[in-house]
Length: 455
Ligand SMILES: [Zn+2]
Image (tube, rainbow, N blue to C red; front, side, top):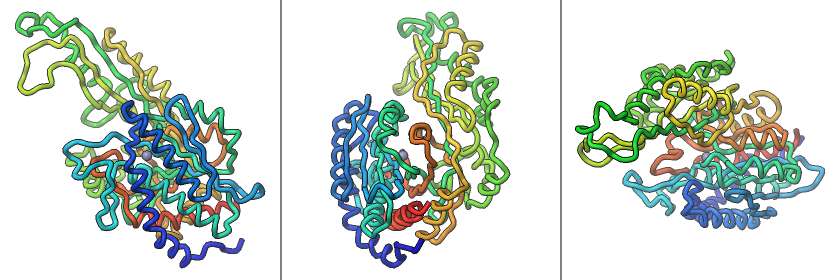
């Protein structure tokens, strides 16, 4: 197929789009679409409407579709029935933001040099907008491709309504492939495509031993302390020193990375100091780069996110608390399943302490992606075209529940073209996106659309 998108013209388009990109990014990030917070329900809806308007502005048909939870925005840039269709997935909901660590207002876009500071700038509104502007250019330049958009607004809460929605909707939005833009490079100088994602199973362990705080001088010794008992349970679920999960049977279904994957890991340019700096970590379990990569990408975890109960104010209040909670989660890798992990956890906790009650929280299956074939090659070639560098093939430690759902319902190959950098701060304070990633990203996506139009 002759080349349609010329390198110089594509670069010029990206550069010229900058004011437009900044204007629309500002509109999107200044709507606090925090899906987790019921107080922001209206803002999530407002964001969906603004996104649909933006799709229409770019020449796409757009709809805000209701689900059992927050809406999904669907878009379609059509070029003709005989042409291939690619679907771009992004999410427009964001994590909560605010507090003393934020140096700027989280929902007001601050442009500082090439950086765009705001909650959601890199996760995932900036990449969504980048792909949209690229699609418009590809279609207007005559690339024979139909581009669909699925913009979710519940990703940050584990996509609770997405599967039901897709089961109903998938037949109406047929596609030849999906490309997801919600992943992170190894470093600014090393692009990456993802070959897998970890899954997740959250849980709350709750223990009640009384009805009110009691004086530890009067009851201590006889009263059972729920926080101490929960700490003992947790200590038998995970070896805090090594991170090894101690739940019997937990590792049975873990598929270790292949030799090929380990080779990619070794060659991907991951640096331990860079990782520490990007995440503000001062102490790590491992110093060896490969060990760190395996731990964050290819191994499951048992994490404690919080202990609740008891006295949290200044000083020490000498009461025996009546209840306690441990908020935990397990990150899962292929071929573990959330259901089995939860069963194993329940069984293990019951054997340790019969009075602990477990409620399950969000569950996401892990995902193993394709690393070979025409779509994987198109993604790698598009990134190389735009950034002049071959992308590393890595895995993601995080989870995107929607991917497993799309694979099941749309039944097509899924690739990843992520544009975010570790220092952009996914879920962290002072999140930002930058023009370099947007400008290169527009070129990469436009090229990708051209390449997949011929598959
Ligand atoms: Zn995201």
